[in-house]
Image 1 (spheres, protein in one colour):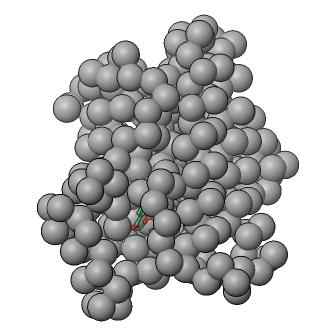
Image 2: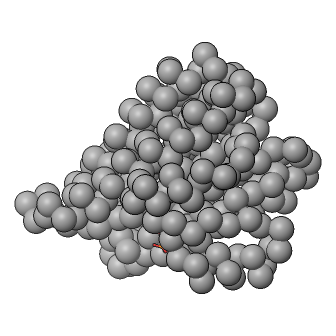
Length: 244
Ligand code: NDP
């Protein structure tokens, strides 16, 4: 894939850890100039130590004003990966207003806002672009204690489709990737209990969780010209979970 994204500039949110960090590194390896965005400076410092060519932005994307300031001189962006998200697990009857707001602020509102900023730039330049939103299998299947997270990812799926509809005429493709469990920091919140993990694994026809690379490879495909006619899909990376 070396050279796939030569002369392209990419922005990845939530690039400090997990899937976002691996995606930023993969895009760099494919020839893109990459801007890694997250809210913890030490994660960006270690990323730059690993990949000296990585450009960075440190901002909490739930702060709209700070995000606008941080991105005002960002320059051309051809590829956007909306990956930053949080999960707070509560049973439906225990859901608090605070947890609802925290999850929706990051997973939905910030994704919409950041996409507006980047899509406006893409439209002004008139050269198109590609956006990948990281959703989840949880957008389409009920998971115990995931009421707010499931709802937020359902919103991401629908936002993806409306963005695809409205941005498509500007040659900006928008797709979502919907992974099953990946054992990142977030994955461990929900699935490190072996009994819970076994219950989930038994419902995945391939009988394994996704590796970070499984998700990254799908993101790279959806950003690349190999998927030039794919727009508005929510693509499971789930070993068959959603179709079984
Ligand atoms: P991690 O928790 O490992 O990483 C999330 C990253 O997003 C962190 O760097 C985090 O920074 C950053 N982030 C969170 N909130 C903000 C914010 N307000 N502003 C800027 N950056 C922020 O998550 P994963 O890598 O596991 O998840 C990546 C994506 O994949 C998410 O969209 C998630 O919902 C989705 N997903 C994950 C699955 C899994 O099992 N892991 C399954 C299905 C989907 P910090 O650490 O500093 O808070």
